[in-house]
Image 1: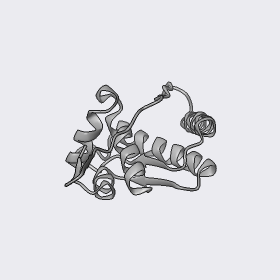
Image 2 (image 1 turned 30 degrees about the horizontal axis):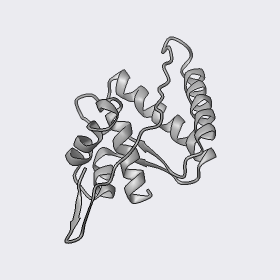
Image 3 (image 1 turned 60 degrees about the vertical axis):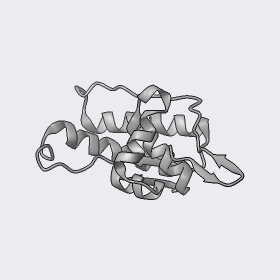
Image 4 (image 1 turned 180 degrees about the vertical axis):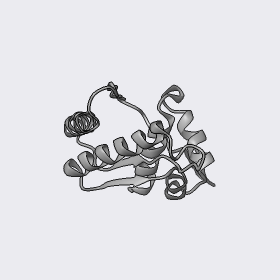
Length: 138
């Protein structure tokens, strides 16, 4: 995190993670059903925590992995959860790591480094998206 210093005060932006969650689904089921299940779970969770802003961190494009099943499924899942989030919170944004860094006022590497210090480093990409939303109001 980047502290702000002035002659009479120092301010360090901080984030307290009150809860975190993850959804695990079996990729063996029908893809449409899987994405629908993810969307329903995300929608329900977002309704229960009632955030002001939702930022979904989109996978960075990589030519070497772009055609593989895992990255394609992640992109589909990101679309499903972004759509579900937007139905609940109009201030829903989808950002790449670089865009999160820019909104945060730093580089992707810096926001990722700051995010890794929160919540024991677990869910660092999601934490970076949260930092982006907190600082930029996305």
